[in-house]
Each structure stands twice: as structure tokens, then as C-alpha cells.
Length: 141
Image (cartoon, rainbow, N blue to C red; front, side, top):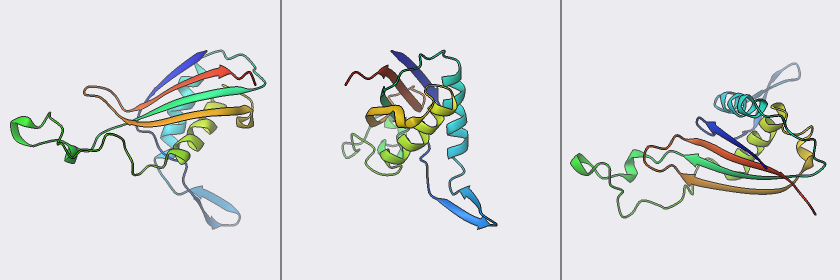
């Protein structure tokens, strides 16, 4: 098993837009830094060349300030604060950008080798950096 911890703000792979002459650009400016961070952390590891790969990813998203109380109780969550990030960004788009970045970093030759994917979106705990925890193992079908 290999484990990759990436610090930074997870960014979804968005739509591309046509800017002319066959050139397509990513609509989100956040996805490039995220992919570069994932690829850089992945490149530090010498991966085995598995024919089938299982990926588990936990995307750690920062909790909005509106989830906390105010004043001297600003460190306490409101009772109405949701347990999970059920809004933007979409989990499937986070997976798309991250799987591409894992390939760029050398985790596997082609993201088509990923045959099992477990993904979770959670809020960070107090003092925890946003980012992702990614585990890769060989898939035995």
C-alpha cells in the first residue's frame, strides 16, 4: 500500500471552454495548482507497476466560518452546522482531477488501471490542513 498526503485546497476538474483555433482551457483556475500539488507528492514515491489499482481518497475540505458561533465561542460549531460538505465541490469532479494528477506523478501509467475507487468528502478537524489523503493498493479481483 502507498499513502499520499497532499496539502492544499482540493479542486474539481471542471468543464473546458473553447478559446479558438482548437484550443481548450480549463474553466477553473484552482485545478492546475491542485493537480501540481498531487503530482509533486506522488512523484516522491517509487510505485510498483500494478495491472489493476484500487484508490481510496479522503478529501479534507475547510469548514466555512458560517458554521461556527461568534465572539468568544467562535471555536464552537453551531448545532445547525452540517456534518459533511454536501455542496460544492462535487465529489466526482474532485476524483477526476486527482486521478489525472496521480497519473502525472507516476502512480500508474493510465488512470484506466483504476478499477476500484472509494472517495469521501469530509470537513477538516480543528488545526488540520485541507487537502487529501490518498491510498493506493493493488486490486485483486
